[in-house]
Length: 519
Image (tube, rainbow, N blue to C red):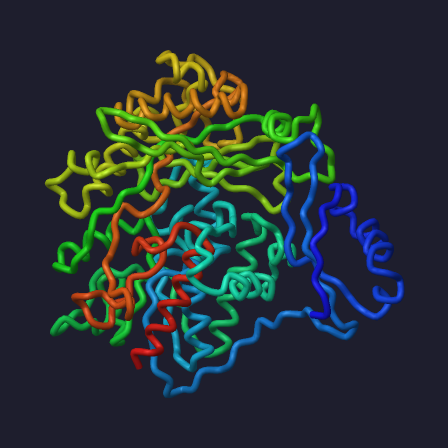
């Protein structure tokens, strides 16, 4: 890089390549621009005042500089050491890629189907209320993020090389904008092809990927991992195992507990999705009657504190999806779970976000007989209650936001992005007071920050219960190995060490490095 400059520009200049080029020529000089090429290194929008600004960081490079990123991986040798990876979400995929770079062969075992076959099972959920327990919005190639958005923003800046993760996505087909956006986003319509490209690269380099392989047992001898049994009949043997099953692999949590492998209950959050017209959020955030076409659909981030029964709980927005859709995310029949996603263009007329309440130790104490699975039991109980109110279908209970605040059941619903449909009613029929009361307090506070937010312009849809894993699988701080089972490396969201695509990918790379060091 020759030089780097920061600029504060109007959206009209910042979002037009032609106008931006003219501005830089005037600012930097025609002679300088003729001998260099430039790239946006960072971009963020400042909408705090009526005069919206865009902050740009521009890097200037030699004219012959090549920005192309390669997706090729080095081939692993036939006699290479091997590592079993359970789960093909971001933690598993990025660990596999990093292991290959270190000359180690990854063998990925995925309970669900590949991205193409998985899409058919998602259609069956939306159209026919049929939930395949191994292939759904949570399970399958790419993990929960593949068909539920693809937001890449993370606060885990100290966990690893974020830039290398973003560059890997770009090398496999993501738009290069994710390299510089303050809140990068790929989109659920783009991610399947990117994930398939990553899988193809892993296989081409000598790695293995096996779909429809659900782990049903662990082989542990003398407190050391020796391999796994899949589908109760297929053995895979190795003395290093990366466990990256995601936050919804309840059978794995149960299996670990049954085998006496130490696990711990972990705080998480439960709540609802709130849905508005995107135009309302645009007007509120940009302070305009109609969003200009050069500005992206507006988003929001809200947080407050609530006190119930003398215990303070956080209430906050989660996984906000501008121009998005609400999707059914149950992993078993007779459950209702909702989540949000956005396509790459974020061009839906709806905006949605989770509004959730922190589940604290006092809440988990109500299920203390389940030990480390207390949070999992709470999730299951509420999901099944929500399902019973809609007759076991994948419809979801809805309620106008102000009706919820006032304790009135809703008699109708607004049009929605949720394809299976809505059943108007009362959230308190399945939400306990230690969740519903803080939610009411949260909505009242959020309405002060965004006037009209908690009016009946919006509706809440439930249940949002899969915000993160209710279980943590302990590991040594230095080796990242389970303290009780040698060769077992808990990883990503399912282990309790990540909270999204980026942090899971970074944790996968960290575990890969520890595994390589162990050899």
